[in-house]
Length: 174
Image (spheres, helix red, strand yellow):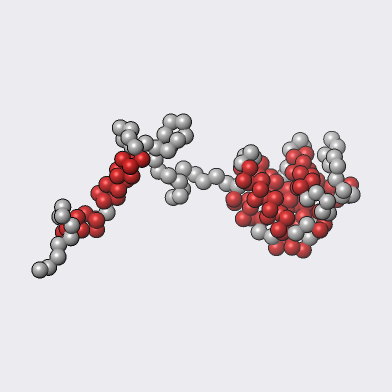
């Protein structure tokens, strides 16, 4: 089977042959290898008039940040973009800065957080993806009051202060 060929690249065919060879060395085979070429071509087009050999880390950062903000790619597709750029820029074109570029950061940024991750809200979203409502419905103020009450209930220091202060506020010595 023929190797995928770039459609409108300014790079010589030999560069693309080396690119595909590295993709295959990393375990990707046809027809998936075509997507690596597509991802690299998309980056080349995003550079507009700038040559690939003249791009720098700021170009890659901006491209990956913009692509990540669009949220139209799945995690694995975004990682494919990052790997494709790493192969092209660091392994094939051997740009000096690309060998030091933090490709791992961008690979890791493509992973969605598991629901058990500490930064993910513990309460599931309300039906339809909205903000969770307080038990029994109600307003935002009621939700905030229920959160505050739960914090007071769980925090032993807060309950000790409440016992000392009583309903009229903190006790003062006379």
